Length: 282
Image (tube, rainbow, N blue to C red; front, side):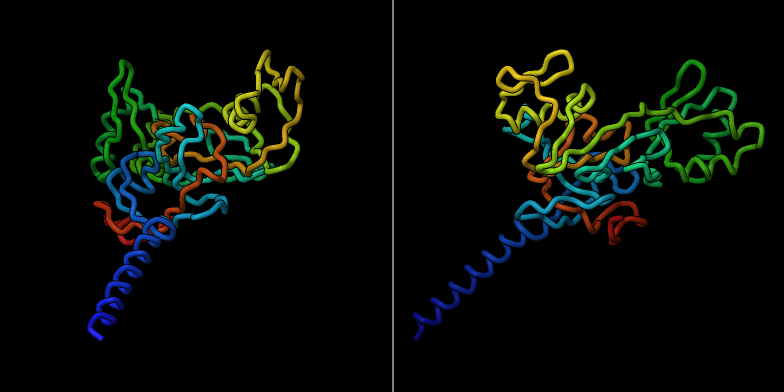
């Protein structure tokens, strides 16, 4: 009887341990953020919970996801990245300074996106004074010859402009980011190859062709034959950081296959920022 009771206890402990391990690796995981990529939605040092995906289910638009770099050079030690899903399979995306056009529809950037602002010398003292008054941090402040550069969210910019004298409200400006357009590959749909798509999808094409693709003068060749269309075997996604100036995202690693998406961030359980702590992640 004692032996049977001991066996049941050991079995219960093993099952419980297995359940906890399963939850840890396949359901929910706590993640410590070591990047500024999602400032100011999330901060470096925050602890967040992520739904982990034991199989490929892809991503949803505007959600914040963990994913691994799909670059072939990163295949052995692929870094874990975090970003907002902007492009879904089959989407035509145009990224502009003030937001995105997805399939022709305008989507504004996240209000937490950090932009770079140039403040000329004549407005610098007033802007810095207002920032201190509003308790807005001087992020990446850099003194330059004719003024200074710093990072703010669009809402912080609005707050500062409202406090400035009318003569200085238009004296400073956001530094624009380059615009570009691309189509995100959809599984088993014909994908047109041109110089821009080859630039955005080069590494994915090499991975899907087992390294057999050859690129020359803005064209792709397979087994010596020019290929104008390609059928991808996976759905792909396009991720961007809220902190576009500092974050590593699809602008650097390219389109991300469904198999590289690790999970979705959904809750911040610890942050030094009380506005984020114990809140759902949007």
